[in-house]
Amino acid sequence: MSRHQRLNEILAMLSTEGRLDVEQAAEALGVSTATVRRDFDHLAQQQLITRTHGGAVSTSSSYDLPLQYKIARQAKEKQRIAAMAAAMVRPGDTVALNGGTTTNEVARAIASRADLAQGGTPAVTVVTNALNIATELAVRPHVKIVVIGGTVRPQSYEVFGPLAMPLIGQLNVDIAFLGVDAVSARHGASAHNEGEASTNRALAAQASKVVVVADATKVGQRAFARICGADEVDTLVTDAAPQEQELRGFEEGGVEVAVAG
Image (cartoon, rainbow, N blue to C red):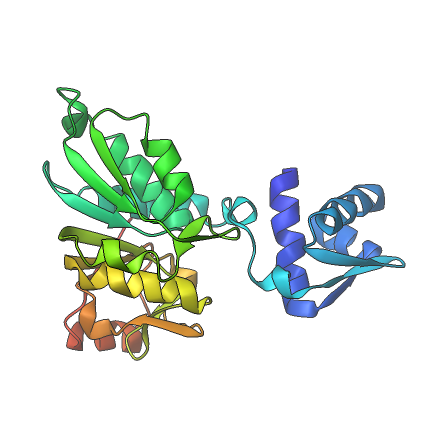
C-alpha cells in the first residue's frame, strides 16, 4: 500500500470512527506504528486531523477531503466510467465539466481521443469551473477552454458563487458531465457543498444533455445540497449496476443507466 493510499484509508477510518489510536491504525493498515505516527503527523500538518496522545481524532474537514486525497479512491472504476463518458462527445461539441475526481478523468479521456486531436485546431470546447481541469487541458491545442470565474473552493478546486452565474447563463452546452457526491432515483444528484451544487445546477440547466458520472459507492445515496432531480438527468454512467429497486427507479424516471465494464 502506497503512502497516498494509507492517508486515504486513515481519513476514511477517522470519518467513520471519529478517533484512532496508533496501534489500531497500524494493525488495520499492516504497517509499523512508526509509519502510522508519521502519517498522523503529516495529516495534522494539513489540518485534516487533530493529533492526540497516542492517536488522532477527526476534524470537520475530514469529511470533505481535498481533491489530492480523494484522487486514488476507486481510480480504476473512475477511468472506466470516464472512457465511456468521453465516447459520447462528438467533434464540435461544447462540453461542461464540473470539478471532481471522476470528471477530471473524463477530461483526460476526452483530451486523449485521437480523433479529436487530428488537425491540431480546437475540435471540442470545454466549459469548466474546475481549475485543475482547465490547467490540464490548457496545453491541448485541440481543446478550447472556457473557465468560469468566481470564488475558489480549495477542497475541490472548483470555482463557484454569484460571479459565475452571469457567464453560465450566456452559454449553450451540448453535454454537461456532472461529478456528484451522491445520486439516487428518489433524490436526484446532490453535493455536500451548497455553493458547488448551485453552480452545478446552473451548468446542467444550460445543457441539452445531462450526464452524471459516479462510481457505485455514490449511487443510491444522497448528500446535503440538491443539484437536480433525477428527471433532469439523461444518463447515469457508473461502474456497477445499481440494486434492482434503484435501477427500476432510474428507468421509470427516464434515466438511462450505462455500466462501464
